[in-house]
Amino acid sequence: MGKAKGDLTRLRNRRRGPIWAAVAGVSALGLALSGCTVGGSSAAGDDHQLVIGFVSTQTGANAAFGQANTFVVDQIRTYLKAHPLVVDGEKYDVKIVVRDAQSDSTRAGDVAAELINSDNADVIVASSTPDIVDPVSEQCEANQIPCITTVAPWQPFAIRSGDKPADLKYSYHFFWGLEDVSAVYADIWKQVANNGKAGGLFPNDPDGQAWGANFPALTKTSGVTIKNPGLYPDGTKDFSAQVSAFKGTDVLVGVPIPPDFTTFWRQAKQQGYHPKVATIGKALLFPSSVDSLGKIANNLSTEVWWTPTAPYTSSLTGQSAKQLADAWEAKTHQQWTQPLGYAEALFEVAIAAVKKSGSTNPEDLVRTLAHLDVHTIVGEVHWGADPNVPPYIAKTPIAGGQWRLTKGGKYPFDLVVVENKLAPEVPLGGKPEPLSRDE
Image (tube, rainbow, N blue to C red; front, side, top):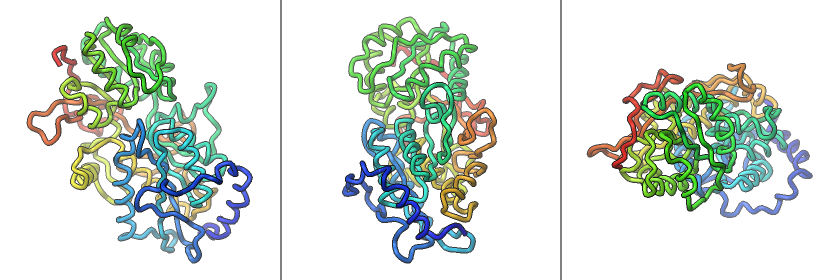
C-alpha cells in the first residue's frame, strides 16, 4: 500500500499554500455538477479513498465535447457502487468531483487548481481540445499531481512553445497526432477526384495554429496543395473572405469549432463555393452539428476516433463499444457521440493506474503511468510503447468517416467509416463519396 491518505494530505497542504493563494477566493458554490462530491480525501475515517477530479466541458462553444460526460460519470459511480474498487486487498471509496471549464482556458486552469487545493484530488482527468487539457496539465505539473488527459492531438498538448516537447513529469495524455489525422484525410482525398487544390480553414486557437502550421507538409505527398488565407478568430460571423479565397479549390480542410463551421458552410453554399470533398476536424465530430446543417451536411467528412462498430471493450465495466453507445441512446434518447468512449476511457486508465501501483501516492502513480498498458473501450492505451512520441504520450487508433443522410433511419445522419488504414480492426461501412453541388 502507498502512504496513508492523512499523511499525503498534510504534505500537499504544505506544498500548495504559497503557490495558489491567488485562487483561494474562488468559490466552489455552483461549480460542481449535480451529484458531484465535494470535500475529498481529507475526510475523517476515509484513509482508503480515491478522489478523481474531472475537468469537464459542459457549457460554452465546445460544449458538444462534454455532452456525454455527466452520463459517463453517473455510469461509473453506479458501477463502482456495485463493484467497489479493491487495491491490494483494501476496499477504496471512489469519489468523482466534476468541474465545468465552460470551454474557457483560464477557467480550466482555475477549476483544476480548485480540485487540487480544495477537493484534495489524487488524480485529475480532463478532455476536449488543447484549450482545456493544456492549462489543466500546467496546474498539475506545478502542484505535482498526476494528470490524465485526452481528446486533443498530442502535438499541441506536448509542444506549447518553440518546437520541442515540454518536459512533463505528472501529465499523461492519450490520443492520436497530426501525422495520423493528416494521413486519414489525405487518403480520403485520394479516393475522390479533385484538382489538387485545397482551402485551409484554420482558426487562431491552439488546434488551428497546429493544424495550419503542420498540415501542408504532412499532406504534401498526397498531391494536394493547401491554401491558407490566414488564421481567423473563433466566433467569426462573416466568412466571405475565406469563401472567396477558397473558390477554385476542390478540397476543404480545417478544424473550426462547431458553431463557426455551421456559419461557414451555410455562407459557402450561399456564395457558390462547392468543394468536392471536405474533411473537417472538431466541428463535424458531433451529430448535433451535422443535424443543424440539414441535407447540405451529406458526405461531409471527419476523423473517427471512436465508433460503436469498433471491436473494443471497457476494461472496467466490460461493456463493448456498441453496448456503451446503446446505453447512452437508451438513457438520453440522443445519437451516440464520439467523446462518449473517451470519457469512459479516462476512468478506465485512472483506476487501472491506482490498482497497478497499489497506491494513491502521486509518485507511485506517475511511475505506473509511465509504462501503463490498458486495453480500453477506445483501443489500447500504452505509454512508453512508441519511441516517436514523448514518453508521456500514448497514441490511439483513428479512422475516417462521412456523414450520410439516412432514409427513414432512427437519426437523420449516420457516421459511416470510409477509411481505416491506421485502424484496420474498425470495419469499413463504405467508400468516400464526393459532395453534391445540389445539396
